[in-house]
Length: 388
Image (cartoon, rainbow, N blue to C red; front, top):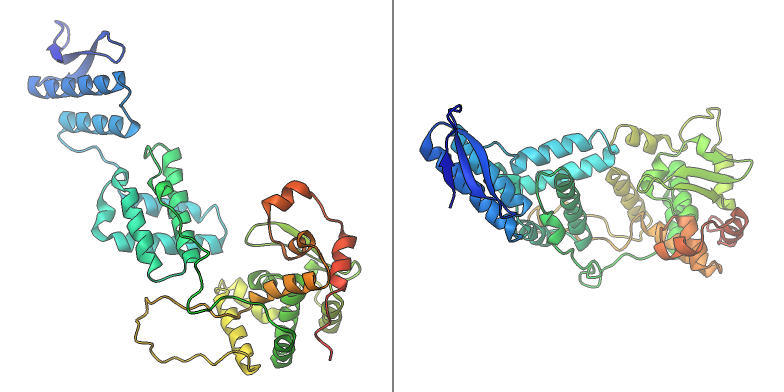
């Protein structure tokens, strides 16, 4: 049992207790009040006992420090609340990641804090894996498994940063399992590629700018956001190559330009060598308007082409939070279509992945580089859907 001792030349009580190594220790409590000093000494003794048997965790050690602080100062040791930590984490991320990622992180955190409600005021170290699992399940009732897993990954990253900084002793979010993304189809729905007839109908319904954007998606597999950022310095007409960095991964891409897309670039080439390829889409990007605005424009083009039904603004009776159904066709379907056309033309899976920018650990281990001639040969075999 811990005891107290006061030296003649000191006004403070000293705690006398057995340390984790079995030796007796003396530690100043910085207290002149005997009762408070005894409580501090008891905390020292209990912490040393737990350490001796290997049960003193970082979380318990912080708890002991907090209790001693409260005894000595008659007020609780201030710790990060859940709300304070996540707000500070979002602010730091805004200076370290691109705008699109910052918006995504902020949206996830805002949703999480709103779901927690008053519990955002409790200490960060009280956030449990059970809390995060319940949040995951709440999202799963409204969103696809892929979207839920993105939100979970954001929380895991935030709490991993807290763990690294010593604010918590375990990343509780890392204990929560992700959802199985293979279970994504509802009522037989699922993403698919376009067939040749649909592609010709879409190209016919496009104006000049959208025709080029569709051709980019079709013959390169580029994502809509990357296409909207393209400027003329990305197009090397002499080498017949397109050079850009993928926004999602930062990967540098050099893709040979297919003949139909090359003819389009020659058709729209103007007097501004630094200007955007697709001015309207680029303007939305510069104003940081989400890519979903362009996706909605493309859906209207598909509607005009007669390959998807017109969207209705009528209420479904399920409320705003009901799970949104993912259409079978979207601009992203062009990415799948590009892969299909390449494989139909005889390209290997490795070459198709390289062209559309699919990262594969298995491929990366075996192939460090695929030469441009091989990529160009594959692209040149893709069908010209601008004729006929």
